[in-house]
Length: 514
Image (cartoon, rainbow, N blue to C red; front, top):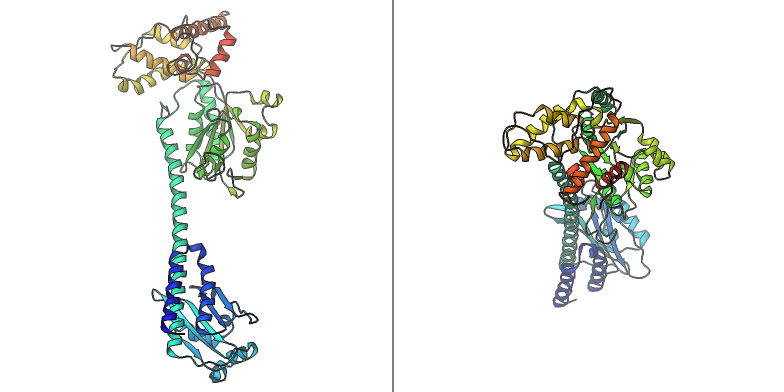
């Protein structure tokens, strides 16, 4: 083969490896070995990659003329003399197998058994590190290797070694980029949670109140918090169930990890599975990237599932599996993932009735109902109303630009007497409106607030008067809002209730909109 022919061969070889992606390098190596055999007139060519830790053969490629055996790396693993020379960085050139030294007896017998007359084996380094070996040999007749032949084999071997090194670096870069993307997705998801936390309305750093009902609840929280058991918080909307969930998390051994919140009623049914368990890219229309679910984000910490009574039956079974086995799959993935999550759930529904009606799985209910805690409504802890009023005043007045140092006794009595269908959340809204309406240092209640006459202990008409007060207040708010229940600034928001809860209260109170 002339120099010009070999130069053209090297040009074609270099061009192919320059354009091939990392996934196609192995296929191109096999084609290059065939080309080497054709160009040199040999019978078989091999290319082996060394394991950098064990110095064994990590992988190999061979091409041989029809009818000749392929050794798949055995020539390196089984031949101690040859392997020692190559690991020492020496090129091994054998014109005739009978010329091998006495210490290469194993190599001579091996060559005789396979009919190999002559061969050349060259160790290849990249960046000063031994990475591979290229070899070619003659089976039909002995061959005397010229220095030019050896150099041509070395040049081809270096092209292959460089391509393999680039392949490994490209694949490592892809793995690193995937890890960066995964960490970026996780960080983005955690940032979303953090923004939700910062944007949510936690108006107290601690639970406010001294009533016996609240103290009984807090005693249960203190008992269950260190145990890691599942907790079910039962209570009306606006009673502070999330605040109690935070108290459980902060008093538990998991307090150093995240507490992740999911409001099952606020997420569309078509998205709740993806929100809880995550999804893979392309799992469904609109899934443009892999998403980490709330269970993965809460791993090692606490997951708070608010309004769990609104979770659909199809998701209840998957939730049960996570609680029992700690396993789940992302949407669009068959890979099972393990998590260690402490669950705190909350609902304002009667889950026992939902089980009887077939809307809630009995086995999930029993799994959740390990340690139920009833959160008392504000009407059962009226003695806490003044503490809460002053707490909200202190927390809100600076932002609104007010300074209140007095709440008239009649105003406080009206606040304590009102039955608070929206509980603490509604009280917070009423106090904020009163702050806005109070130009001086004395708190002035909104005229529409129907606080009525204070309830008197033991009064036979107390229950009836409370219902009348509540009806009057709701009707007054609806009248101010033109009968609109939903939307910003309308009745449900003003009362601190969900629209569905307000409609339920209106039905109970016999209130109809015009």
